[in-house]
Length: 270
Ligand SMILES: *[C@@H]1O[C@H](CO)[C@@H](O)[C@H](O)[C@H]1NC(C)=O
Ligand SMILES: *[C@@H]1O[C@H](CO)[C@@H](O)[C@H](O)[C@H]1NC(C)=O
Ligand SMILES: *[C@@H]1O[C@H](CO)[C@@H](O)[C@H](O)[C@H]1NC(C)=O
Ligand SMILES: *[C@@H]1O[C@H](CO)[C@@H](O)[C@H](O)[C@H]1NC(C)=O
Image (cartoon, rainbow, N blue to C red; front, side, top):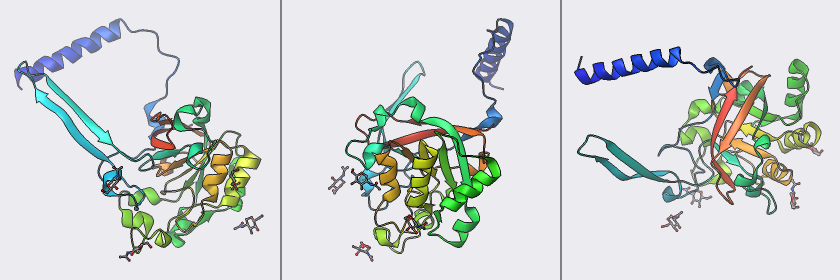
């Protein structure tokens, strides 16, 4: 083994011994790692954006500096640019409402809460244009109890398995022909039921939009925006979250005046 590697190992071994000997009291906030679920896709050139965006409007990462100094220290910094709405992202109320809150103004308590997972994987596999129904929500409640106030209701359609294959995600004949898109989402009636009768804080989907691919008007977006609720789109790993009893914490980049933003979304299983 190279001496440098030995030195590093020795350093960490010593450090761990010292930490163990002088351990601080255990923090009261602790979540065991096997309960944590990463619900966000990574961001890079393959990240899926709305197909009508120009190439220069998706994700770009360029190197500003990448140098190794004479003392061996390396210094690196990059520049990125991206549209707000792409990859795993948040829809702020301002996306579909002039008076709706922009990203940086959404209160933190409206970005965390109980998660409700509605599994429509079989229905969506049979019907690319599936829209989650009010009955689906009632069926969930029959099994698991009433949807809690302030919940985030997620559609698990299994679509994250197609990531980042744009053709399979949008099922288009023609990538810029929006009328040819096919993917599942929430029916606006279901959104209205969840917002007005269950007082949810937001909806989440593992597809590119909370309104389905064939939508010509975006009623689910309007209902969410008009009522200060948020949307999470292109969410992943919903199959790893318990159907009931889990919580989510959403951490969008706080873009001032942003209508949406790339999103870190953390799931915590019960
Ligand atoms: C992308 O390029 C097109 C065509 O050159 C241009 O009209 C548009 O403004 C550019 N978009 C951005 C965000 O730079
Ligand atoms: C794709 O659809 C767009 C919008 O409907 C249309 O303008 C364009 O001509 C279509 N392209 C092809 C190759 O069919
Ligand atoms: C949605 O609600 C409207 C108004 O109540 C009703 O006419 C329509 O049949 C509903 N559609 C579905 C698919 O539930
Ligand atoms: C949302 O609010 C706007 C502005 O008040 C209104 O025109 C629109 O019909 C509303 N949309 C829905 C689905 O309620």
